[in-house]
Length: 184
Image 1 (spheres, rainbow, N blue to C red):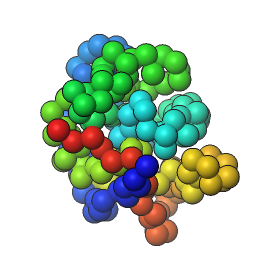
Image 2 (image 1 turned 90 degrees about the horizontal axis):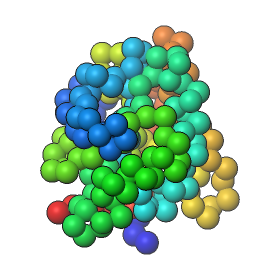
Image 3 (image 1 turned 60 degrees about the vertical axis):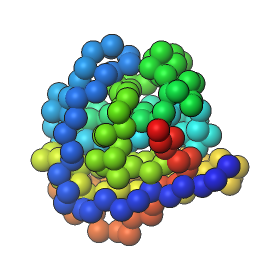
């Protein structure tokens, strides 16, 4: 399996707007509808990537831990479903139901949203403040499939705790790493 790191996304960048199909509710939803009052996390995932499968439970736990604190969570899949039918909207809905996702799971059919965010891999995490300015783009934590490190969400949790305490996150951001987005 080839490892793909996340690409750069400059701090302070305003989150590119979008309207995408939520495969769970089967409604088109916008960033403006889904953003959190205090912060928003946008993450690119898919159904079959072993790196995403490895962290799914922690994604659910993070959302359960922080949603009531004003953090919005938005999952997006941008993979080419012609070549990867396991990432189709129907299968995305099945995955969201199976994993009990407490967040929308949006389908980026044209891949324009992934390109606007300079997304490269699954998973790929972006944290924005209440004004949708980028404050973090990097990994969930140091855990990877088969490296023996427990999945804790440490890096994202640290970013959120810093931000929710009205402080500025200044640590080095380690890139996320995973499977490449499957481009058309």
